Structures are given as C-alpha cells and as structure tokens.
Length: 601
Image (cartoon, rainbow, N blue to C red; front, side, top):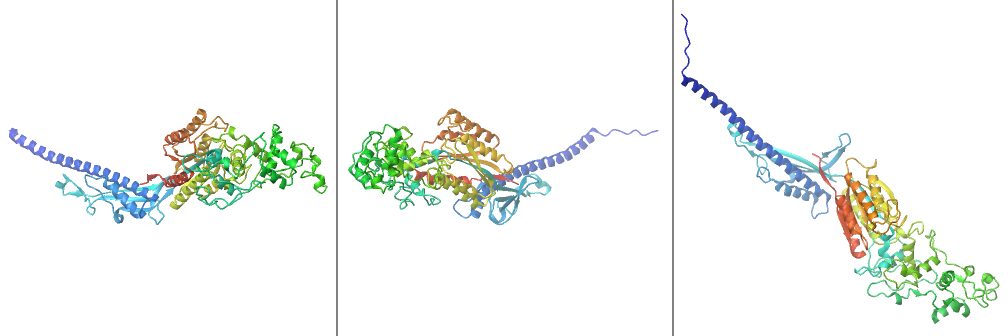
C-alpha cells in the first residue's frame, strides 16, 4: 500500500512567498540605490567636465596677453573665476596653480588632424586644467546616498580639459584707392573736426627722408618735418603759411601767387622781378597781360614763364634772348617778335624730378590749378593760386600711380600712412605672441591684387605695404575684388587645414566698381552688392571677416554689413588724422591679439 503525499498547509506556502519577495526587494532596492548613485555620479562627472572645459578656455584666453599683471597669474585667476561659476553637485570649485593648471604648447599631428597638449616652457599657447572632487580637493568627494549600505560612502571624480589658441590664416585686405590720400589734400585742409591737412609733410618727404615708423601727424609746425623742406621748382621756392584751420587764408598766403586766366596782372614787384631776370620792359608787359589767354597754349606758356618753369624767346629787339644782347648765340631764331607766347618760342623748361615717371607736366599743373573749382573741392580759394601747395596737391591727386610718381609711397599720405603703421602694430603684436599665425596681403583699387602669400615671415606684410602708395596701381575702389583675393588665398594650398580663416578688411567703404574694376559711381548699388556677394561667399566657407573703416566720408553702413555677414567685428576710426592714427593702432593691436580659443582635449 503506497504512501500519498499530503499538500502543505496554505499558511506555509504563503510564508515561503514572503521570504522570496523580501529577498527580491532587497536586491531590487540595492540595484535602485546603485542606479541613483550612478546617475548622481554621471551628472557630477558631466558638470565637472563642463567646468573643466570652461576653465581651460578661459585660461587659454589669457595667454594672448595685453592685460595687467603676470600672465601665469592671470591664467590661474581666469580658470579659478570660471570654475567657481560652474559648481559641481552644488559645491563650488576652486583652482590653484600647483594642482590644477598646466601651461604648454599644442603640437599639431598631421596624421590625425588634431592638436595634442605638451607641457613645455615658454612661449605658451595652450593650457590644461584638471578639476577634482576628491578627498584631497577643497570641495571634497561626491557623497553617495544608497551605496553606503554596500560600504561606499563617497566617490572621487576628476576631469581634464586642454585648450589652445587656434592658429589663424589671416588675409589682410587693404584699400589702395586714391581716396587713401584725400585727408592730406587741399580738399580737406579745413576739415571742421579739429584736424589739419599734412600736405606740407607730404611735400617735405618728396625728396626724403621717409617718415618715422610710426609717423605722428599733427600741425605742420610741430611734426618731424617742421624744420625740413621738400623740393623746389622754378620760382616756387617757399611753402608759405601753415595750413592751420582757423587762421589760414589762401588769399593772403605768400607761398601762392594769383594768376587768373584772361586777367592782366598789375604788380610793380612782378614787373621788377621779370626785368631782373633779363626780360625787357616790352616782354615784361606782354608776360603780365592776359589779352592773349584765350588760346590755351598762350596762357599755359605765359604762366610757366611767370613761375620760372620756362623761358620765353620772344624775338623782340632788346629782349632777354635778343641776338644783339646775348653774344650772337641766335636764341631768338624762333621768336616772331609779337606778344604771343607760342610753343616754339619756349625754352629752358625746368627739369622734372628723377621720381617722375611720366604723365604729368608743368602745363598740366597749370591747367589743374586753373580748373580747381570744377573738380571735387569744397573750397575754391585755391583756384589760380600757384605754388608748392597746389603743386603737391596736383601730384598726389591727379597722378598718384607708382608708374607716374615712384616716391609717393615714402610720404605720409593720409589715411594710408596711419593704416600702414597700424598694420605694423598688428604684425608686432602677433610676432610678440610667437603664435603659429600666417598672414597674407591683398590690395585693391580699381583692380585687386594678391601681394604676399600666406607666410610666417610676418614682417614681409608690413614691408610690402610700406612700399605701396595711394592709387599705387589704379584709383577706384573695388571692395569685391579685395574680398575675392582674400577668399582665393584662404582656399589655396598655402592655407592650413587646422587654422581659423580670418579676413581683415580696411577701407573707406565707398565701393564704386564692378568686379572687373570698371567704374560705376561712388556708392553705386551694384558695387555695394558685389562686395556683399563676396562677403557671403567667404562666410559660407566659415571665414570670419573683420572690417575697419577709416577716412573722411566713410560708407560705414557697407562695412558694418560685411562684418555682420562674416560674423566678425566692425571698427570705425573717426575724427582727425591725429585722432584716428591712435585709434587705428589700438584697433589693429586688438585684431592682432584676437586669437580664437578651442578645446583640444
């Protein structure tokens, strides 16, 4: 007879389930506690890394220099300040130099396309910051909640971040149109902003020496050229009165003579001077008469003789070149004896200076001054007034190109000279940082030109620009062309893949050509749009564009628009040449040190 197993009582089965549930709940609660603590640690780790990243970026930013204090201290202070603003699990983080901050250099690995941090000696271009929540840190380790049941009260965390001053490929784009000497010209001698034209300094520098670097503008009685003089021609030997706003009067300037077309000159001193030069009374009378000025050549020749730029073989008996009074040399063979100054009667023209390449002439200068009022001048008191002031103005305004005058680059044409010195300041700033920046030089006027390849030999940029003059190649303002040259260089094989691409554009902003350099008119809508199009092209390729506006009559709106498109900054140097020279120095110094910062670890 077999045994039959009897079922356990129901209360016993219930007891077993309770045990199983209790054990399971313990395990579940342990995993839940662990999950909560792990989540907390994950959050703390993220906060710690974020704080380390921010501190490293802030610290690297101080390597640019230029602040007050020791760079080593500034780096630690910046990291500490930012770290404290990024608490980790409600605890304020602090930074000390000894345990948290390292300075070194970033080494570029061409194979990986990345930078690595190397702890080295100066010069520094990278920082590494380590933040800790540990037993040895001020904030202490992370306090655990549920893991204590498993014997873990705290947990230490650490986060490291490294940041580098990113090297830049910089295309410097400079306006070399003829407006870059307008502030030196007579058109703005009385600017109304407290400044003055430095036309005398330009004249003094025509025969050297080149202005000091930097050149300091100011009233002509106070600059480095105050005791220097420039070249003289014929009877134009004295500069005359200083061009000082508020006191200068062209009608009373002893350095200018007034010879109006068609007007007879009634001046006993002039008559005496002509006779002293050897002319007869009859010749002197003809030279002072405006009766025959209706014929342009007669007018030009008469003024040339009065200015001592040429001599007249009149053919008159008893005249300066009369055969009877000049040893029988036959100088009067072309003169017909009348009162008209024909071209074939002119002789002994004043030699042109060696720096004249061609194009301009003494008769061209005479016409320029006679037509002064119909050109672009706000004042007309210089019309018909001949002297070194209007001659110098003629040279830089009408014939600025290097192939016509080879030495204007060595004069302080404004605002170009202030720009040259400012670019030198930027080059000095970058060089002092011992950065990995490369710089190119692009220029534009009617046409645009690539002048210097991207190079680490930064002084080449400044030296090349110093050797350029306003209107060096041509005269108009093709901003689009300048941006196009910059874009091409920053996209060339010379540009580095690991660099930040930056365009620095300097101009008065008055675009007036199409992209091929054909003149369309100052500020034409098409010219401005061409510039905007080229800025958008550069921005689409992640190139940053900074703009610097300078000069009288700036189209600042276009320069602001270009900077906004390029996600850069727009700077405006305003006021008199004395004022904007200093401003440009500060602007380009800031641009030189405006190095981007990026995390590399």
